[in-house]
Image (tube, rainbow, N blue to C red):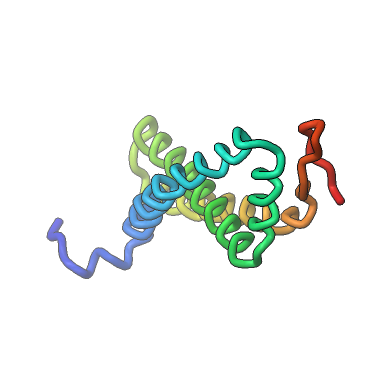
Length: 131
């Protein structure tokens, strides 16, 4: 098969691209996540200041995007495992791509609907309490 731009419209190419880009996004997010976790080591006040910062709308939107990236990477990886173990079947493979995309989007939507139910502060006892 000749590798040219004609193959870029195939669903498997787009699944490949989403899998690579979501993996890159997760790799970039991981150090930021460690910084956030380190705030808990600095005490309750430091963690509460960080949690207050996370209520910004752009942070909430980025959380939804990172959950979508995580779900897309997970479902795309599971799809690849199924292809490895059971072989390539054109109709089945395209259905797996659609299922993986649907599950990833559903996970992001469920997270987005639950964003406002998250705890907003940590008290001196170390437990999250909704205020």
